[in-house]
Image (cartoon, rainbow, N blue to C red; front, top):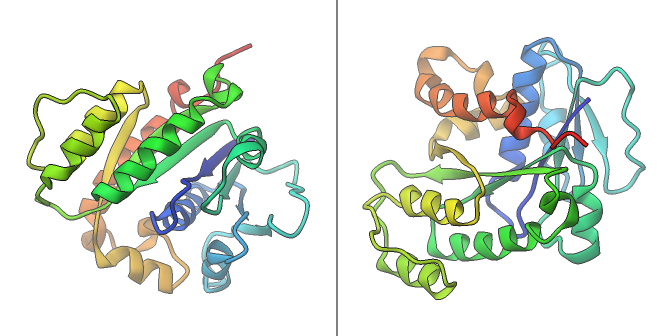
Length: 236
């Protein structure tokens, strides 16, 4: 069973959006998918309640209030984790996953928070030993967004040297993650398509291809990485 977790200590970065879209993608591939929501807000499960009956099935679990009992025939377990997880709670959650994906918004505040969180994750034993793989995705990026000068100062203040800050904010984010040897997989743009899909209980892959062709293109690096050995735990 493939176990993928979406997490970030900061709220509002799009964890549930990525979780529901991944779940819908694998369901479209005729895989048995379980979407486990660890957040008491239940955003992923609310999306699932809105899902049309004729859509490829996805099973939902309210993991914040019940034991995580996943059927044996499950192909993919997608886990949506709440914000503000640290310390022992974070370590316990990481044990459940083979792969961790950290969505990061392209703002100075979010980059700062993500920097601290990624560094905390790198101290977790399973991540250190590469028994759980870690990667980041830039989310809700406005195309041609200009970088504030504060981004360079923030990352520089964390002892991460920079010589050049590009005019697009995802470039310094990518270079920052490389300093920590964390893969930066792709950039997902800020578009109403995600809101339209969410309102209908669908994923971006289930909308008209002519409408979301640019978005599907941006998802391909993430899907390819998740299907590769690089995203899987190091063999013991």
